[in-house]
Length: 119
Image (cartoon, rainbow, N blue to C red; front, side, top):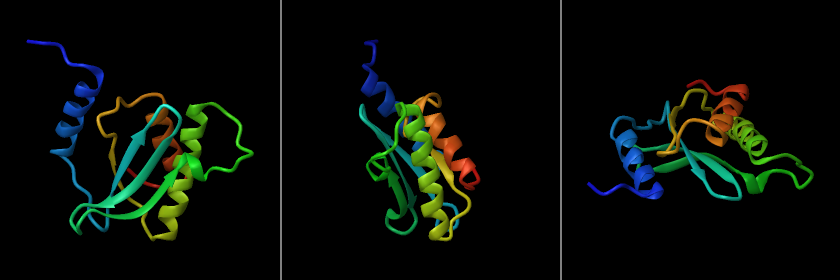
């Protein structure tokens, strides 16, 4: 059996995770998207045609923000929680999108929890 490349392994993990969870209007799915420069997250209702209910990205952070990418991810999580509160959402299902739960993904999740989201 040939070994998988890093993107292929992430895709396989993502498909495995997505087969087990789904977002609803009451408890949407918190999807994480990661790049080399930043991180973004959105809340998606899968039952209603994959509608995005709230989102946050590293580009929305203030220009005065100073910190590494882990601190940036924590701030994006807090911003997402604030946007979710405006939309009336308190509980979510966390979808790490095949990324391992450590580093920036973990920081985003903890930032969202600090902001008041429950998952």
